Image (cartoon, rainbow, N blue to C red):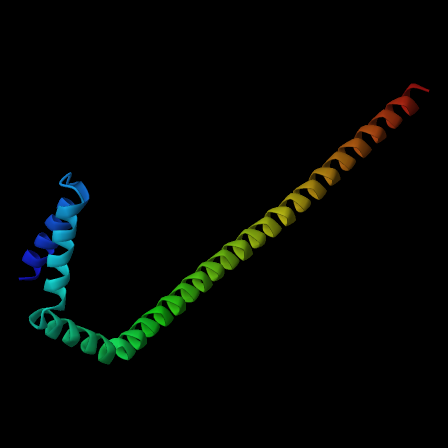
Length: 134
């Protein structure tokens, strides 16, 4: 029934908008639509639908508000989880960078010691060679 009513309404609107029948035909269609709308057989269901909507409106508002709250809480939770993951990743990266820096510092000191020891040995050898030649 509802589908037929929508179809008839659509056809009527399309005809009115697309018709080239002139003002007289438009007035006839308008008068017929007004008569149909004001018919008690149409107004009874219209009134029932309005009453139903008024009765259910608070429930619908509450349902939608609860749904919106759940979405907000879920989004906050997801963003917190994302922030926690980012913080964990940053902490892990910082820890690895610190470890790498410590290893590099140790390696640099070790290399410096070897270079200094090698340089000292070389200097001593050179000094010993020079002393032997004199």
